[in-house]
Length: 279
Image 1 (cartoon, helix red, strand yellow):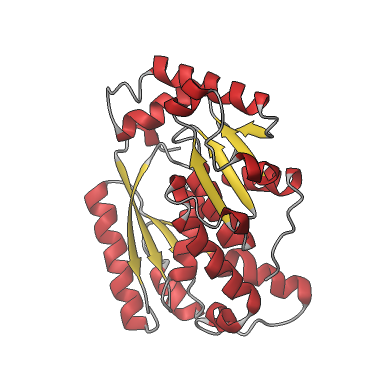
Image 2: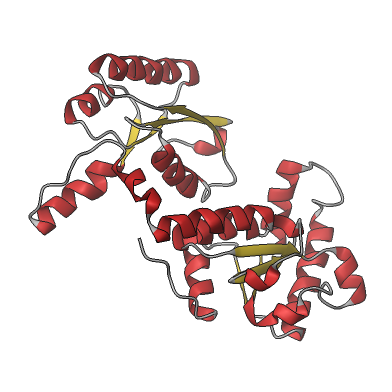
């Protein structure tokens, strides 16, 4: 196995015969699990001819030669011929259709449409529109940017800065169409010993995230190296104060230290009795 700790940045190519949005969404959801690593992401859309497939293969090989490591390729190529050309490159391939569609064809006994851009035909469905609306809501209400319209939120995540609130909020929005706001707990809140004034009335929809001080310090040092914000002493203080506040306020919470976004999201759904969206 490659020692990734010695790798500064890994190249990730997102290849599709359409816009690449589906592959990019899948890519982001997967790579979010590896927040200690750095990735250089490049999207190659509309690979819908053998000629374009060969161009994509060459690009992959160029990154292989330049980086010294195999690129990681997320692919939603439907056409078998085009897919085969691209896969001649020396890379790690994560192929959504080979992984998911082909086994389903076998299980269901039905041939899939193998249509380019089929996913986006759902754009007129209510579920799709709900997801788009939820994503917009979660982006607007990220990191306490606004306290307006919190009554419309399905869930409000709280926790210290960099404890995993933003990726969890977006995952809940993209995967389940849930409007997820998130609000950081900051030193001023700990000094007062109470939640920000706009939150208590929404306590029934609040869920808390915490994290080990050691892991928090690592993450913060990537963003602001050698700062008080990232120091282990400050991280210990903030985590302890946040956990004490959540206990005092009777807020359900969990540690994100060793849990994936999927695990965190599932726990939120269960604890707050939120109904999953339907495709």
